Every structure is written in structure tokens, then in C-alpha cells.
Amino acid sequence: MKKCKKSLIVGFVLLVVFIGVYATGTIYKYEIYDAAIKMELDNAGLAAKQLKVGDDYIAYLESDRGEGQETILLVHGFGATKENWVRFAGHLTADYHVIALDLPGHGESSKAMTQTYRIEQQADFLFQFVKSLKLTSFYLAGNSMGGAISAVFAVVHPDMVKSLALYDSAGVFEVTSPFLSLLEEGKNPLIVKTVDDFDYLVSFAMEKPPFIPWPISQVAAEKAISKIAINQHIFDQILNQSRADFKQILAQINVPVLIVWGAEDRVIDVGNADIFVQSIPNATKLIYSGIGHVPMLEIPEQAAMDFRQFIAGSE
View 1 (tube, rainbow, N blue to C red):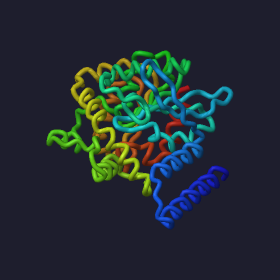
View 2 (cartoon, rainbow, N blue to C red):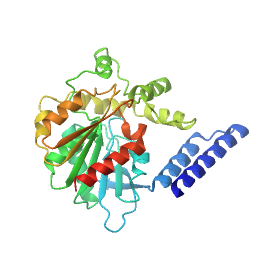
View 3 (tube, rainbow, N blue to C red):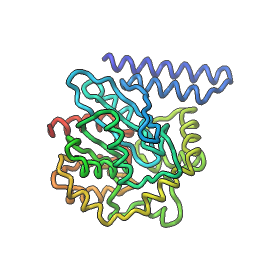
View 4 (cartoon, one colour):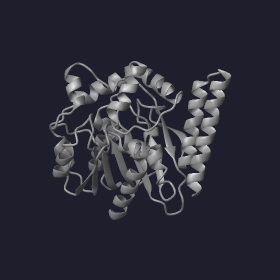
């Protein structure tokens, strides 16, 4: 009841802000965007922080760690940010210590064009990040590219990973998808160059996208457009990476694994979920009907509840 009341208050404040903006004709897009994000974080029990890891400044979100609470580490996908996990995390922070980071080249973290962003290097970076935070064991979850990174991490550092949840994970593309067909035509909907591209990406990646009011959507589009160069740089590196041996990597995972997929995923076809399950010794599968590539954004409460059940069963 308390959380519901808080959500209503947040919604009312946002409504007042938007009405005030339209009434006065004064538009402070970025101020409104920042205020909305801050309210989302507060509502989820998360705080924005920054940490230097090697030469990179890394932005991340973290909840307070209560006595005896286990840690959950959340890893976003290509072109995405830590904020993709906020509403999902909000259903977990009361009972778990939750961390979601912006990977190098993404969000508010450093974006060096000279850096290598291949999956193995990003998994190694993730190790440096958790070491900097003095984390020794945690539940790990990754979406899309973040899933592939998390899978590699679990193989290299099995002693640190209590369980692994992969949401529409990259790494296996044996069953083709609309996204792969577009790539063959020389089009990449994951790299946003215009506001229209952003709108298309939202509808392409998600079957049930969350409501994104103006000016939040406008600012999000502008932020994505500003990252064309780094996004292309990262995408080229992960695209040219050999996929032939990824199933061999999956076969080495020895922690409990939950394979989650949206049945309507147009980026990585749901048919690949079966290949993950067949390749990983201790894996179970969960398919959401009517959901696309980003379940934790499309159905955050349901996804978080199912994740809770999974990690409770893996203890």
C-alpha cells in the first residue's frame, strides 16, 4: 500500500510538472528528464553513483545494503543503459542489495573510441568493476549483449556467481530474426540516428513498451543520437566476433541458469532459447508470450517476481 501511494505521488508530481511546462511555454527538457529519472530512482530505492575502474569512469545504481542481504548485479545490453533495470530492480531492493551499471561506452560511463569492446574484454571489465566494489559473490543477470557478457563472466569466475539469469541473450543466433534480416539489407535499427529512428527502435525492440511521455522521450532520443559513433564502434567489434564457439562457452557454465525470452523478440529470435537450454548443463527456460526483447522493461513486476523465485530456488 505504501509503495502504491508513493507511485501515485510520483505520478502526480510529474503531471504537475508537465502541466506547468505546457502552461508557461517554458521548456526545460533536460531538467525535467533528470527530475523524472531521480524520482524513478527514489521510488525504486536506488542511488546514482560513480566509480573509477582503471582509466574508465563508471556510472552505476546501487540500493542500500541491509544486514544479511545478498547482492544482485544487473548488466544491460548493447546501446542500453543501467536505467533499463530500474523498475525491475524496484521490486527487489527491499530484500536484496541491487547494483546496475553502465558498461564502458554506454550511458554515463566513459566512452573511449580507442578501447576494445569485445565480449571477453567486457567480461574482464565486469570483473574489475566488482573487484573495485569488493563484491565476492552475487546473483548475476544480463540482457542481450549483457547476457553474453554475463555468461562469459560465469565461466571465468564461477566462484563469484551464485546463479545466472539471461534475458534474450546474445551469443547464439542460429534461428534468424527480423533484426538479422535488416542487417543483411545494410540497416541497423539498434543504432539511432534520428528521433524517428528512436521511436522505431522502441517499437521494434519491445512488444509492450512502457509509456514514455514528452519530453522524456525527446531527451532519450537526443542522448541516443549523440552516441552514434561509439555505438557503431562497439557494434562493429561484437558483430565481427566469432560466434562458432559460444555454445562451447555455455557448456562450461556450472551454476544454475534461467533462460528468459520474449516470444515476440524481433532482435534475437525466441527459437535460440532452446539452444541455450540444450547447451547449458543446469538451465531452465521461461518464455513470456506477447513480450519482446526487453522483458524487464516490458513487464518489470512479473519479471522480477519470476527472478525472485529462481534465485530462491538456486540457494
